[in-house]
Image (cartoon, rainbow, N blue to C red; front, side, top):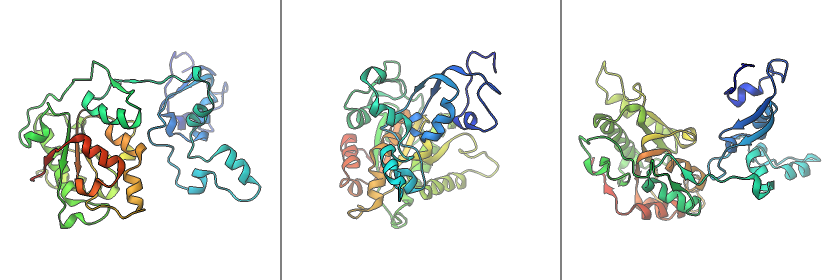
Length: 319
C-alpha cells in the first residue's frame, strides 16, 4: 500500500484506532472524500488526518448525516457546554456544509453537468433543487432502456423515461406507512421489467418506509415459481430512500405510499415532502423513472404536488 499511487477505502477504515499516520501508513498528498455531505464531522476527520490536503465532494441538497439522537443532531446541550454547542452546531451538520458556509467563492466548484440521468428525469430536480442549473450531458440526455415490454407497455415504454402511475388505494392501503395497492403495482412492474429483458441488477424499487419495502420484497418473492431464483436473488434492489443515496439503476420504481392526504402538521407530510429526501429518490434512475402515487393524496404537499403536476396526467394503474 505504501507503493500504490492511489489507495481507496471507507472512512471507517481510515478512522480505525489500529492505524496511525506514518506508523502503519504514510501521509498522503491528497485525501478525497466522496459523499462528504452525508458524513458527521468525526467520521470525516478520521479520514482527513491522513492527508496534507483534502477535497470534499458532496451535495447539501441531498440527505445530511444520519444521527439518531436529536440532541446530538442539533447540538442541543445543557449547562456550560450549550453556548459552545450552539456555535459549532450538532452532528447533523457535516464538515462539508460547515466549510461551504465559510469558504470563499474560489474554494467551491459546482458540478453542474450530470452524467447519469436522461434529460426528462433530470428536469424536475434541476428546476426544484438546483435553480435550473443542473443539465444532462449529451452522453446520457437521450439514452433509453433497450427493452421490449411484454406487458404494461404504456408504463414501460422506453420512449417515456418519466412516467407517473396513478394508483387508486384499496382497503389494504389505509395503513399510514404501507400501501398495498402500490406494493402490488411495484412488484408487478419490477417483474415485468425483468421479463422485458432488463438485467435485474439494473432494477431498483424505492419506498420511503421500511414497511412498504418489506411488503414489496414479500410480493416479489411469493410470485417467484418454486426452484427459480427470485428477482431479488438475481440482483434487484428494493430499499428505502435513505439507503439508496449514492446508488443508481437503469430503471427505478418509486412508491410514494401515502393513500390519503396527511393531516396538517403530520410528521408523514414533512418526511415525504422533505426536499433532500425527494431529491435523492428522484435522481437514482438513469433511463427510466416510474413514480407510483395517488394524486389526490399528494396535491396538498408543495413538492409532491408540483411533481405530480410536472409529470402530467400519467397512466392509471389497472392491475
